[in-house]
Amino acid sequence: MSATFTVRRATPQDEAGVSELLLASYPGLMRTAYDQAILEGALPLMTRANPALLSSGTFYLAVNGHDLAVGCGGWSRELPGSSEVTPGLAHIRHFATHPEWLRRGIGRELYRRCAEDGRSSSVRRFECQASLNAEGFYAALGFRTVRRIELRIGPGPMLPSILMERAI
Image (cartoon, rainbow, N blue to C red; front, side, top):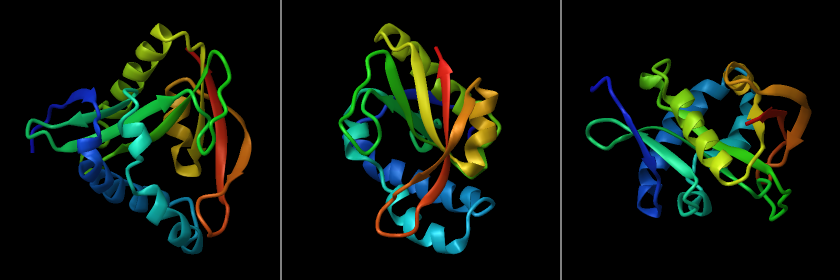
């Protein structure tokens, strides 16, 4: 496995690779913070690539030397799950790193790319609906916890999460 990666904009053609990455990443990481019943309802939806994000131009993919997805993440102006837009505010979306590629700076580089592009698009602040296991990652990027929230992800139980924010 190559130790280096590059970051590029994701496209709709990356759907299978992003879904494979999410499926490799989320179940193991989230198991440390959530009950199995919650994961059984949420993971089938959370581990599928979002076609709107893939075609947005603001979702990025970290790839290894063989163009295999080792990390992903992006942002949108729309509040996740709605079409609500607040001027100057954007939302961090669907970050993941392959378990074999953790602690190599992939998440930090993806965030740096989001912040750079967000600033050039008049975004002044990011919000993030972080899973409980991701709070430390976002805090290390300079996000602050606003409050605990409950997210509806499909027909299963609510997903306890954390609303976080950061000026950019």
